[in-house]
Image (cartoon, rainbow, N blue to C red):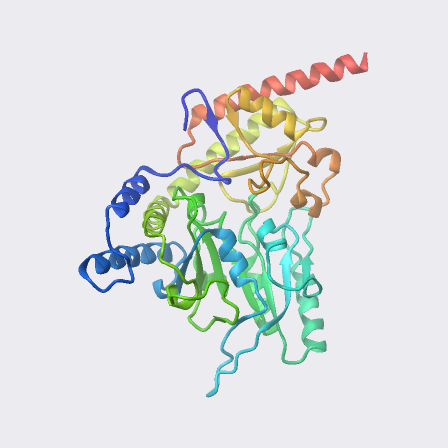
Length: 401
C-alpha cells in the first residue's frame, strides 16, 4: 500500500514509482552531460539514454531505433494523429501519401478523441458493441466506401489496445489487417495495456504504438512513440529545431525521465506473466466481493478479454462522485474513469458508447490494481464498499417507508 491504512486502487491513473525506478532516476540526475554533446560526459549520458531506449523497445517487441521519446502519452498521441503522417508506398521514388481521414474508436481517451490534429470534418468515430469492442464490420465497410470515393487517398485509424476505464482489450490485430487491406495506417494507444499484457508490435500489425511511463511504475512526464518500421514520416512535427529523437522531437531529452522509463519497462517485462496472473486473481476476488455485497451490480466488459488489473462496476442508485468521496474517507482510493479531467467526475463517454443505462453509468467506479496491490487492499476496499452498500440500502428502505 502507498500509505498505511489505505488501499490505493487507482493504478490506471498513475502507478507508484518502483524502487528500481527511483534509484535509476537518482543516478540519471547525477550524470552531468547532455546526450547531444560529443565529450565523455555527453557520451555517458547518450549511452544511458540508448540503453533505456532498448528497454522500452523490448517491452513491445520493437527496434530501439524506432522509439521516439515524448513528454507523455498525450503528446505521443497528438503528434502522430495528424494528416501529415505518411508512410513510404515503395518504388524507386518512394512516394508518400498523407492521411485524409481519421477513424477512431468511440471509447478512446480524450487526447485521441479531442486532441488529434485532423479538421473536424475529417474525423469519425468507430462504434463499439455492448462490451466496448470496436465494430470491425463497420470499420471494413467505412474504409471500403472511403477508398471507392477517394482513389489513392489514405485513412489513419486509431484504436487503443485496452480501454483505460473498463480494461476491455480491443481486437487490434484484426483491425490492422482490415486497415492495411484498404491501404490505411493503424495507430494504437497502448498506454494502459503496456506492462499488463504481452505486446508485440509486429504481431499486432500496428504501424505505430504510443506509451506512457507512469502507467507502469515509471516517472510522470515521459512517454514514447514506437514505430513498427522506420518508413513513417510526419510532415508537421510539433517541435522542430535541434534534431533530437531522429528529428521527430526537438529539445534536450528528459534524461532522468527516459532512464526511469527504461527501468520501469525492464521491470514490467520481467514480471510478466506472473504479475498478470496475480493481479487477475485479486481483481476477480474484488469483483466477487462486490457482487456478494450488491448482487444487482453490473461489471462492465466482463464477457470479453480485459486487462488483468482493471474492474469497472456500478450499483443502481449510487452516484460516483459521492461514492468516491466516501470511499476516500474510508481509506480506499478509486476513480470514476480517466484521471485527465481536472479532478471532475463526469458521466463516462465510454459507457455511453456502450449504451449503458445513464442511471447505471452515473454510479460507475473503476478499481485498477498494480504492483503495490495486495490482499489487504482488497479487504480494506470491500469493507469500505460494504458500508456504502449498507447505507444505500438503508436510505432506500426509509424512502420506501
